[in-house]
Length: 280
Image (cartoon, rainbow, N blue to C red; front, side, top):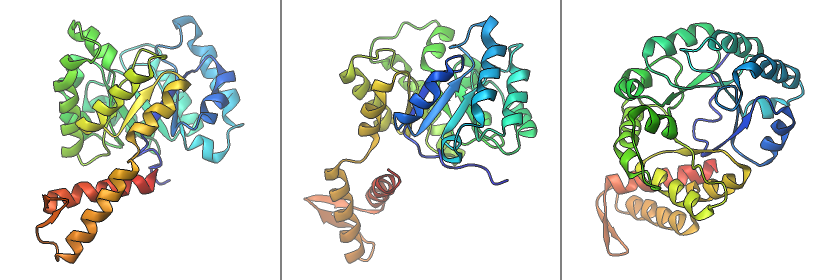
């Protein structure tokens, strides 16, 4: 079976607790590009097995298109719940697995041997994971990386401001590792506030400007705000078309557009904007 790629450039992912099956379809109906059914933090230790059972019961009711948008977040590889999560993922032939607290290539490559048809999204949430990020990014079947910003702060003993400026270096490392591994741009972490739309928009814009390709959402109200930030604006699309046209007319050489020099790197940015507009 060919590896799934539908969520390679998805910009907005919505979490839903695995033990709340009545919310699965509601989450899909928000229009989120990816819906993450979470077996980890959202589910208490005594509810893990029941949550797996609820996923099994619901799975056959999903359409092929819905299944192509579903991601399972398993428990961390270091936990006693992890093996049963992999059994579930293999049984259901899930397209995408989000792996919390990923810390080594051995972990990821081991999963790929068990789930040969599943695209893997390692979450960088610990100091060890950040230190091993290059090898993790280059592991088998890794589609893209994701940042667990709150867990990383806790693991590092950080006290971040609302803008999380203290995590900018970690975010840069994740973007750089993704580019070097030639995988899709990474997914930024969550915004804890569900009501402060301005904060959500600012966090999404920061992620976009740093080179992230998407963001995790914890509430349906966040989905459209994140989607709108990552989608190229009409002015960006107009500028990109103008740049491409001017470059073509100049035979690929440097040219001025709106009083500014345009050369190959600028053309690449314009092409990326139009590519994202097409995917949107």
